[in-house]
Amino acid sequence: MGLNIREIIPRKELEISDLRGKILCVDAFNALYQFLSSVRQADGTPLMDNQKRVTSHLSGIFYRNISLLEDGIKLVYVFDGEPPELKYKTHKKREASRDVAKEKYAVSRDMEDTEGMRRYGSQLIRLNEEMIEESKELLEAMGIGVIQAPGEGEAEAAYLSRIKKEISGSVSQDYDSLLFGAPNLIRNLTLARRRKTFSGYVEVKPEVIELTRVLNLLEINLDQLICLGILVGSDYNPRGIPGIGQKRALQLVKMHKQPVLIFKAVEEQMMSLPEEDRFDWKEIFELFHKPRVKDFEIKFSNIDEEKIKKILVKDHDFSSERVEKQLERLRDIKEKMKQKNLGKWF
Image (cartoon, rainbow, N blue to C red; front, side, top):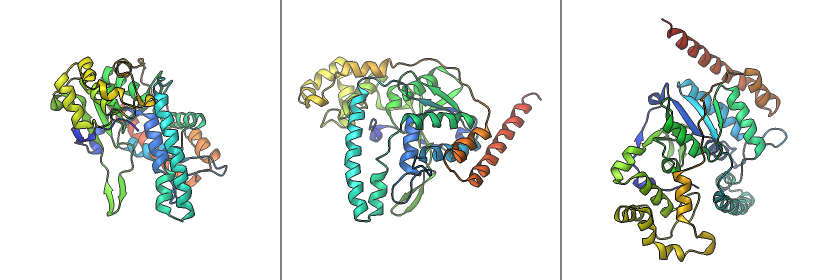
């Protein structure tokens, strides 16, 4: 779901080579849901092993991240901890959306509409504890950093990229990261590099959104950006305020400046919301302003080939030959890192 402020946000396209040598914090759940949504069969069903357990997330983790590691990018996946109580409203709405998608998928299947099956099928899967734990195990076996956040993963990723000089950005498709104060938000990094459209395939490039540039261009401060996000609708108040889009929200925060005055100006519209969609703006503002985060030491474990083969080949029926080819790439990456580190002594 996430925050939609795309129309008013300045962004800069990146080449993958621009990120070489950088350490990036990835919003893990955001990336895993991308893999679940995009790594699918033609009829929209996810990849599965012989026991019908979903493996799309493992495929995405393994193949996509090896490409990023080859590009010289160091990754730290940050996993969600306990979500704030307000997040449960978003979860309820997502469950409702899945129910609708399930019905539409069934209709598409009966009509043998493979495009509809693909579209609605991608909305049906959710992460469970087993999928989350095996994702962590695979990432660590690949030498990728894993952090278990106390609260929201994207809030923790934003915090770490703000306090640690060695971290160059926070990776997510959601703009909420900006409201959590991420200095640099990197989008499109964990997506496939080509996207299928009606007219053929188009290249998908990463892009960076710099918080300082956003605030300067919009002529607002971070508190006002948080207010803007609440007005249009965030994960904590998904509906926002009907009738207030991105541009109108920007006008309001610039006109009234202070959070109290901004929400005083829209008080009548807020009170006209149905009971289930009403929200306390102060509570949401505080969740963005002071999220539950903590400092972590950034660690990268050694590559464990046997663990990778156990998870993928033995436990989930991946092709042994295909996995071995990817492990060769991992060995090359490891060797290059050794050479680079040796070079530091001369």
